[in-house]
Length: 223
Image (tube, rainbow, N blue to C red; front, top):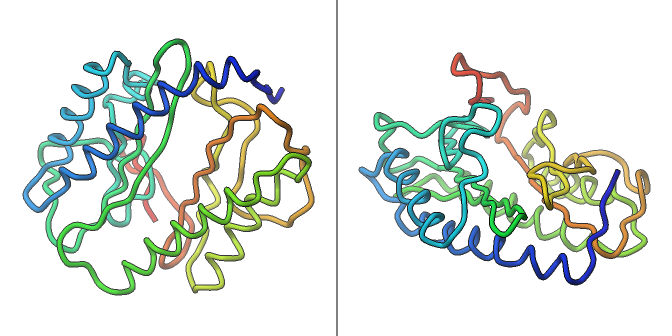
């Protein structure tokens, strides 16, 4: 069931999502050559708890960390490690969630480290633009599949691939709620969007083939 939140509920959700935005901005600013993904994770957990929240990912289905830190070919759910030290040319996806006041917030950002190839910068730009196009499709009365269609059209127009195994989702009193939001597909399908829905659109884009596999840690998905 897709939940439509009241105005009062939406207001109660704002602090969790603001904390996500604030912590993500601080962690993004800390990304640099020589910094480990473990360092970023420790920083994020401290800032979340200082802000009165709880890490949403840590312990979720056994996940061991506050952040998902996915570097280069890692698409999502990378586990922070003292041994994973960032170097120039890397790109790192930092995904995090917060629980605060009974509600969840969830967001991610992908950051280049030092000097990266021009095609990599284009990948980051196109992915960001695909998210903006997805958000533009979120209108009362529009069909849910318009969101993923907008992502796919923009990504493939620029020669990149949409990862299909992972999707966006609703969010609220649980981290993952209905509906699932694929980043591909034809427009004009699925439920109509209604006032009060809270959606996490999560475009995941690859340079080459979009197929993924899970590493031996049971979490990290790579192309």
